[in-house]
Length: 284
Image (cartoon, rainbow, N blue to C red; front, side):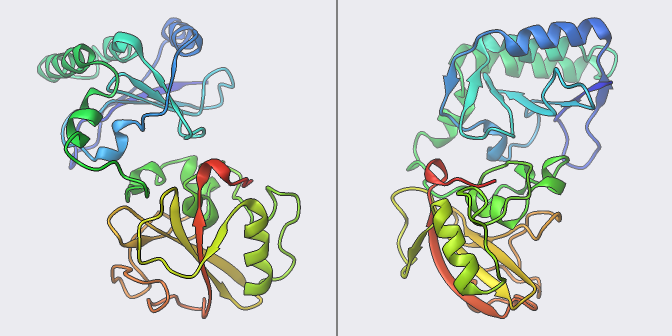
């Protein structure tokens, strides 16, 4: 089964992709699974840079290679386990992936990528992340970063509850299932307590910034479905309706400033606000 590498380079044009040879796949497996130091630093994927921003490794049916891996700026990020990243010491894996691109990326572009890799490697892991954020207060709430969610298999296998908790489980998580007692009725008074059993904390006031995690909001289409919104670091709210892309607008196409009064379609019941602390929630 193929392993596809994509060099994330462009905004308007399609990014170049290529398939690894069997020998390259074996080298990739060796480099991916050799012992590495864990890092709590978020990968630079969320910075939304223009120009070169790393390599995406996608495995199609090869159980020995993760389905999706992001390599950039001295870090290796497996989207299915977002609680930490791994350090790509001296950006060796990133340089290896560049070597596999020789027949697929033109020489000038390859030269620019190598210069960027060497600059970042000299600065240490997460050099760009630290440089960009060093004059800013660290974010507590997650940034609005739809790119983290809007590619397969993440797009189709994670729902609004995953998104609100900022946890990619690829299980289409259900309130209460993580704690062993799922909701039994599609009503505020049933879905809300199920989410609390998973670790969500009811709050009445979301005017401040939480000390940990993020604020989320539950709404219900009576006897039909539930939906969750999440407040991001920019103070606005976003959501991921089922298997469709993450977005920061309501049914009228307006930015969501307050989920209580945005256009929610059939989700007429506003159930309340909660605080989600990803490290303390259990969802599946």
